[in-house]
Amino acid sequence: MRPSRRRTSGLHLSAGILACLLAACGGADEGGRSASAPAPDALPDAELISLSDGRPIHWIAADDDTVYCGVDDRGIEAIVLATGEVRWSVPDAHPGGVARVVLLGDTLYSTGDDDRVCAWSTTTGELLRQATVISPQRIGQLWHDASGSRLLACTRTELWVFDPRTLELRHHLNGSEPPDDPQSAQGQLYRSLQGGVYIEDAVVLPGRSRVLFSIDQRRSLWSWDMESGELSDDLMPEGTGGRLHQGRDGRALYVSRQRLARYDARDLGATPEDVGAGVGAIREDARGGVLAAGVGRQVRVWDGESGQTLATLEGHTRIVGLAIPIRGGRNLVSFAPGARHQPAELRMWRVNRP
Image (cartoon, rainbow, N blue to C red; front, side):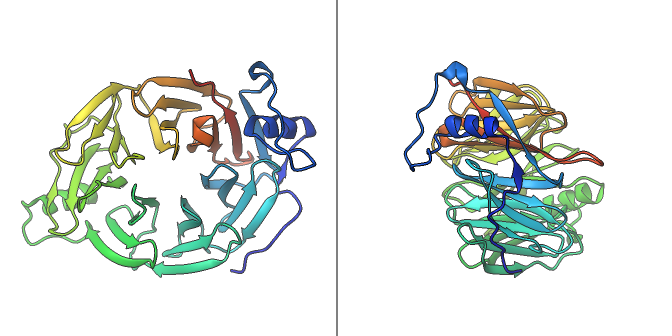
């Protein structure tokens, strides 16, 4: 699992595309000076960055300079956005498959089919620490809270909360074991999860021990107190649908089929905004308060404060897996997973903000 350093590019970038990307992203010229940006109408709205050998991408994380990809069946690659160079790669990061990668400071966390949660140096790709989860199901999701003090992982029916500094397990919610009281909230959760639905997203409310998590298909929103174990599922009407995201300031952002709702840390009160339907996983820029998500083959961008739609970006030919705002929301990185005989799509976007 030793990372390899590669000077050859893992991406195929034409000279024209590379020049546009450098200009759009504030790249440097050959002397190391910051390149002057052309007029806004000279910049492309999007450029396709294609993996040269057509390998699938399973998930991505990104900062202002680098996109981290779960590629092939098991590897992780760190790709420099300005040049397309592979900074480092770990070919066997998760034997059996990489499920998720998530960025927290200068550490990249990942999980996969080998039941491990791993922490990697974003600089070198070295394995820093790891934890093993004992579960009959694969870990399919990975998040961190707004404070960076908790790392959440889940299978279809279980939630784990780790300390990201040590990967020590702090809390565990097991929805796969029948409770003593079938009529309790735990019993309701157990019956729901045994009925073919699964935990989809989770966030930690700031200043509290409470976790909000959503369940797919049934589309309900649950609250779990990590200290007391108390469960509740009466936060939203059943069937309203939605995805959860941990907001930059700690608020939980819940996107249903009709609205963007912010749950206050004190009373769970929701402030709705219309956003449309079919929203995928949500991400927010760390500085600019810009939200983005895949909506079918489009990338939708919202203002994080008002909920106003800033842009609808078109260019992917398949369903968007994830879109990540970077550089204060001025740029986005998005990907669409590869399909049979079709390479994955990795795109860099310029966002015209009002």
